[in-house]
Length: 336
Ligand code: A2P
Image (cartoon, rainbow, N blue to C red; front, side, top):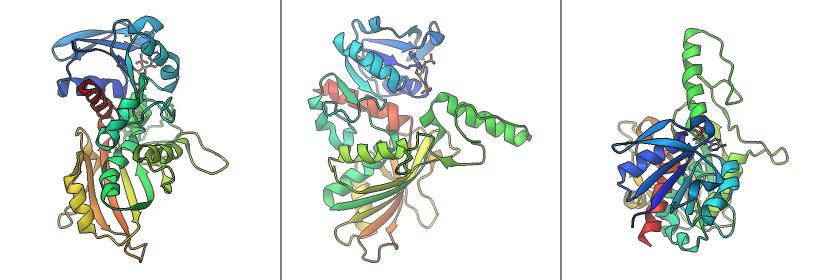
């Protein structure tokens, strides 16, 4: 029989996209339970042609549930994932709660779907930047010997949740009207501005939590535990798609044509690399689609040896960076 699915955090920015992705991909389910905080209990949400009522999440919410998609923050995952597993559900967790646990697979289906087999009740959905970066990195790593990654991110509001997206809208409106706006969700003014990612800062090494997650998780997904990665994570006033400037060093000279040919065939990647029209990956075009856009593929002139390639990628943070990747993991689970 088809599984009964629960969405924890159904009313959130990712939760809404989980419903969308399940519907868009015709996910074979026999029941859908929507869970959120008591604030949302009784609200209704549309799924296919049904109106479903949101229920308050409790330890008892998972009776009869086969698959639980968690996206309500790591505190909720730590508190309730065990109850879901105990009730017999497999958990696909979008939070950072379990991503580095040795017995929890950290999965991007195009990259390491085989790792799903090792799960013991919980599978972790990686950080959005780690997903969007590893989709193009994996096929390059497969064919070429990857030695080093340097990245700078341009991250959308959606990664900080629905309230941050609303803050971007409201603060932009206020700015255009010349009105004062006091940020509540994010630490700095967002309209016509950008700032260092709002994850907590490690005062010893000067990296923030987002940067450290991307480093650790990218290594784990690619199964390259010693891969040197340098990264700067920045929030930009974009609603829902992240972009990343990547510089990749290989162990031998490589041409942009080789890289372009590999990415043209890569699952989950769409080349957007039109030099004549200055048309390259943009958040506006990445938004709403499942593929990671890749382009601006060129020799990195910062490395005179010819072994380094620069490129620019963009992916929908809410879809491939979160909800779609979780649903793709669930599809792989069903196939097994
Ligand atoms: P709610 O809408 O009832 O607050 P986002 O990432 O967009 O901020 O969304 C967070 C999601 O997590 C929302 O669906 C939110 O529900 C849910 N959530 C937050 N706190 C709790 C909680 N204590 N119990 C269950 N769900 C929660």
